[in-house]
Amino acid sequence: MADDMGNAIGKVSDGPVALAPNELRIPYDNLRDWLEEAEKLGEVRHVEGATWERDIGMASEVVLHDEKAPCVVFENIPGSLDGSRVLVNFFAGKRANMTLGFDAEMRKLELTDSFRENYMADLREIPHEIVTEGPVLENVKEGDDIDVEAFPTPMWHEQDGGRYIGTGSYNVTRDPDTGWINIGTYRVMVHSKNEVGFYISPGKHGRIHRDKYQQRNEPMPAVIVCGGDPMTFLMGCSEVPPGVCEFDVVGGFRGKAMKMIEGRHTGLPFPADAEIVLEGFVHPADKRPEGPFGEWTGYYGSLMREEPVMEIKAVYYRNNPIILGCPPQRPPDELARYRAVTRSALLKENIAKAGVPDVSAAWLHEVGTARMLIGVSIKQRYPGHARQAGHIACQCHVGAYAGKYVIVTDEDVDVSDLEELIWAMLTRSDPATSIDIVNNAWSTHLDPRIPPWEKEKGNLTNSRAIIDACRPFHWKDEFPPVNAPSREIAQESREKWGYLCD
Image 1 (cartoon, rainbow, N blue to C red):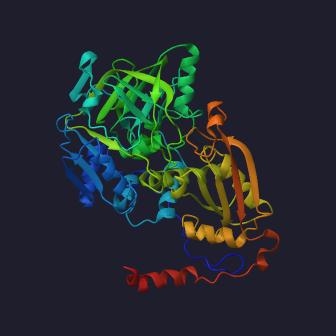
Image 2 (cartoon, rainbow, N blue to C red):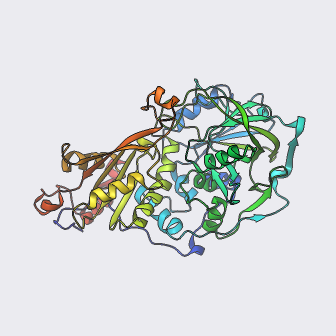
Image 3 (tube, rainbow, N blue to C red):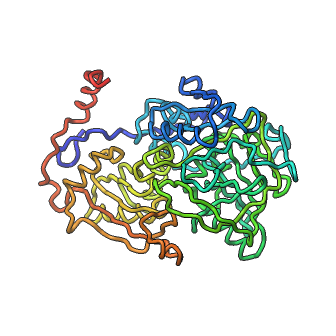
């Protein structure tokens, strides 16, 4: 296959085929089911006796950077609740594709496009179902019996300000005006046996809910799920449209309603087969120092600050409970891997719904933790097409928060390949004429480039660079051809000679 000029197209796939809902198979309903599937793939290691104070964080630093490393389950952790465990590195190896319900051999762009076509393009919702029984009710602690410090919450990074039980967790909140239930992923720090704190960036759905309660001078009911199924966690990490409940989206993915328990104190729903659930209230006036915490940028971007505290009213947990740990490291890491797949799918959907035609691919790069570096490829149709795609990408729902650079290039470039993307930028753009700058864009306390004195004033904005790395439209037919094989020859070469690289 060749582009309009006859230049070779190398790595771009034909694209996914949307499956009927009954053909999709997410082979698990909860974290234990997921662990069984990962065991079948031979990608789980069990470690006995590692300490939460030091060992688990050190081991996680080693495995989370390696996309071929196994999932690790830490067991018999000294000084912790009998039988409690910590699971890290769920999104790597063949189990990454298994988590999303797709073939293990799919490459990155195939995976994200399949996720988009089969899940997000026609967003199906099946409302969650309230039940009265479930494994999460095997242990219920209230009042003086609450002791969240009994769980094996690690010190993830050596300079963290405390133990963070919430890294692979998600928070459930309710809009006080509309009743909309939202799922969001925010770091959760242990303050005491019955108190935790969590940081939420301004503009996030959970923060909007919290601000509304604060304006009313009312405590915000909240639930924190510290060991949920990976698909629900991934949707909590994703930019699902406002007003949509992620529990219902995951029900739509699976073709059946998620079964939920209503909290005794808040009435908020949480999965009946979750591992550990904290239920309580965030009081407007109760703030404590929170942080620092090594964040997704690879820095301690937000130092110790006063943040609201949640008073825990009940703890629910299964026998031998599992904490899902997804601590951010310096990217690229596990967090970057799973966010890249889901957010890239959503980004392509956002750009298409904004009316930009012929978007071939979109990828939020792992090195920028699926936020700070975006690659978009298009089949150019008219002058200004590349700039349009770039500006939409940097300001749509998925791309607006904490972005930095957008590179738009032609459809022959595999934008998920960092070296290929940078090659296109270096050879098809001109520094003086190919870059647009957007000022005063939405950012975060976690952005290390925002000066501390600006953060203190609440000036949480940055700039964006949109780089047009397409062949110049008005003379693209005269642009030099690429010295790469045709797609058919490239595929034949891989099949015939690929063993030489094994």
